[in-house]
Image (cartoon, rainbow, N blue to C red; front, side):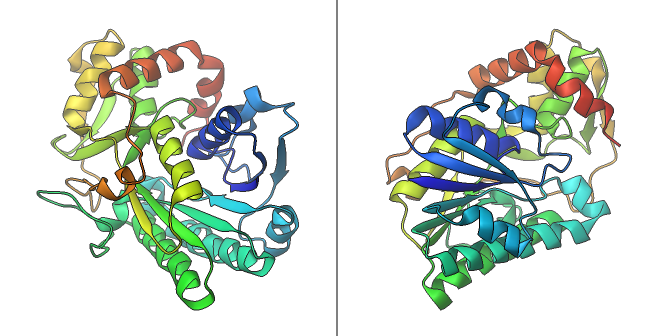
Length: 320
């Protein structure tokens, strides 16, 4: 099978490309605009492999997407603006890329009659939940321009199934972490700050809860949906590792050999959801289970950032 992977030079997309290379004989076209979050260095270890072709392009460019997608059998659509804080400052880019991009991808895949499309989304589309876990049938109640644009993207993709019969499925994952994650995100930001002996900014009272899923577990789940998931269906993906942000910060402080005095409370984020939690029974019925245990995964992630300053230091310097 030949895969068309949008956003394949980003964090999850590059890890997925790596997953496919090591778990299948498929080849792929990686399509990425190489904005600040897209990085050819994320694919450095795959360079030279004849199964991977890289194409630089904007996911909203119909002609570019059509040319690059031609000859592919399936699409895994990662390309997105994904940082909540940036969406609060510049929402236009999120609506353009996340909603416009999925429309171009789905319409092009329809015209080219591809066998399967998987659109990668987020648990943030459900909003906050005080107790229990969201199922795929629950209503969407996004709180930020980012999550609203992803909710819109989900609905656009699923509308292509209903209207045109496009064989598209949607995945909604909890918070991912692992190697090659841009240092604007909380775990790499805290880790790289702590490795340099710098303070880490903790929003509000630090009691906002997230479910943490190692990126390799998410990639395995996405690949399972690609190969076994049903068109028109949504699949939640979660690591089963719910943790308050304050406790996450404390674990990272310990792993980096620092003192908790470096945890500094800051004003809370606008519209900050209190708790995310998704029910993963549906994808578990396909046979998927998370492999990574949280403490082991956090330790491995900290070790990766400790050993790969060449990768993150230039990105950190470029942060606004």
